[in-house]
Image 1 (cartoon, one colour):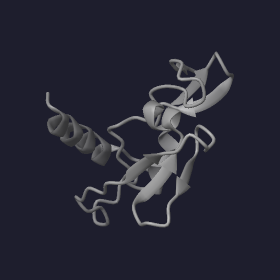
Image 2: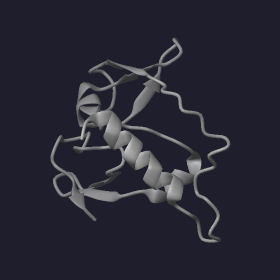
Image 3: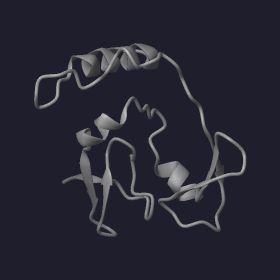
Image 4: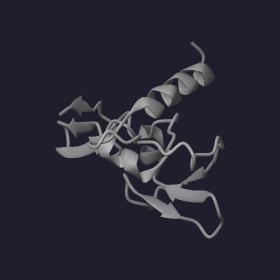
Length: 115
């Protein structure tokens, strides 16, 4: 399955999710099929694990480790999906992250473990 097919499959699964009162979790009437791209500029003087806005729209700065640890296939639909966090723990530096966004710990670049 190629990347676009995988994304379409995941999107169709998300549209089926409901919240605690059985209402759709994803409001498809408000969702637009658009892609937003942002650029991340590496800056070694910044703290790992954080993103800093740039003066230019759609551009953020981050420590190179942060960029390396971030999932490359992120997609964000609505704030209600923040409830679907997938807790992860870094046993090396004892920090907690979310598998939705990170593939490695942005502080030490070690593999994350399911919490």
